[in-house]
Length: 331
Image 1 (cartoon, rainbow, N blue to C red):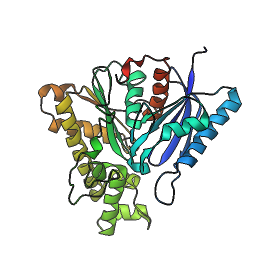
Image 2: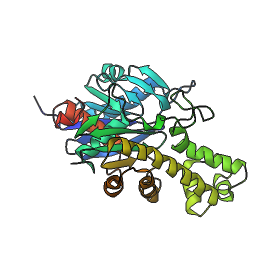
Image 3: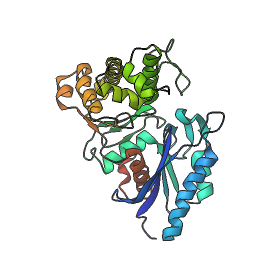
Image 4: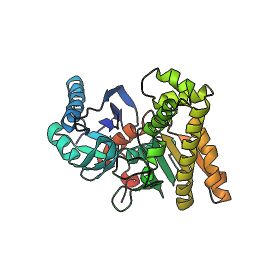
């Protein structure tokens, strides 16, 4: 049987769907393709249209090379890695959606799907900055906020494969904003991209930030605008980001104190919005660490791959197919 040397990888986030063909050394073949995630009128992501987008990319590769490729997928929520069922994907408003089976039925190829943070941690362990690190946390800060654990040299999913949901630690369950998971006041609702944009909009509505008002120019404030205003010296924008960094550092400090981690790898659109954001988290988290050893040895770094979740979807497929060492997967 011919060994699989390439897979089609797909990363489905809360806003964008990205795809690319990746080989077993982590090399990209052709270009990355990005499209918007299609949503239905009821606010949920449109499964059939998403499968249409994946099928079109797969068929384009099939026509070019004459080969069908296994599919690796990352999804921005809780996914059963054995079946590919989207158990709870808050940002797509999916619950118990039989994603893996539906895609497999349509494409007629092996499909390996799991939560995006799991895939990202796997990619960094196999091809990235996490190589050789026994205990680390992957964290994404983007449309959502969440993580996954790599402990004792392998992925750690917990009892149901959902460990690492740092974004759904409650901060204010009574008066906080409603989270996509159905609860109120989760960390994610204070620190993710939409939360930063919302805080910026409040500053504009209260006429506190001339810089943000100018950038928005009558439109809604975006997360990127808050970063731009902060870099221009705008006080309210800087205060918004200072609070976000403090809350993230507190959240991560608790994780390090609990698990004695060696490294935190941070990715996502918000984390990559500016070079100094992760650096400031690295500095601030030291204030919440319990031991001298943790303050001395902990490394907080940015993701080292162009899109760790996408590359991890490929690594998952290769490991499941036996091309890469499968010992890094959960037992």
